[in-house]
Length: 262
Image (cartoon, rainbow, N blue to C red):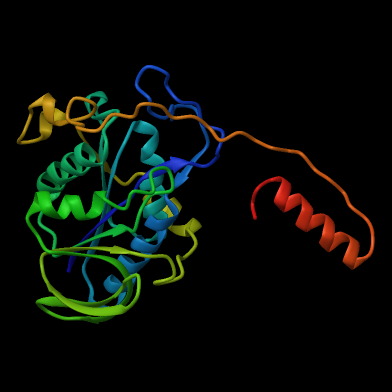
């Protein structure tokens, strides 16, 4: 089975600056890590590979520093990786991002199964995976919490819906987004790190795509624009109270009323 996992490099800290002109995060020079949800997606792909055989590819979009998450995926067992990197991709909203990645998928190869994390910790929209599937014109299932069966022509999964658990059989090629807890992500292997340190990572830019129209990518291709992004205010106020349980409960009640929480 030929499997593709979409992974993303996200900030590893909450102290991230915002570009005042574009309204997007300044990612250069900050501590970064692989999106936690993507670790579950990668582990799902590796489990399928171990049980059914096949190849696990990873695909990421971002500046050259995002190469590090592809290297990390190699240390966990991924076989090949591709980075979509071009300044023209910068500032993309979920629609432009999903379109860019879909264009990249078409250039990388044909896949029976594409696996994405449920969402990213820097965006939390949970839209990119399903939108990619729409651009690729393949069926998709979101919020997958369990793999029930991996067949020759289809995969059967459980979806975690707001008020129910649904079982769905979906034919290949298809895309699924997985939630936390589907599998426990494995730790990177030092032995694999040494054996894959020279493994090639393909880098694709806009010039490599079939659609080279710059208006479909980055800020130009984003129908939604961020009006303002700002970090939450940090409140370090502390109060230490002493007294009996009845006195403390009364003080807490009065404080909540003063703050208009009740």
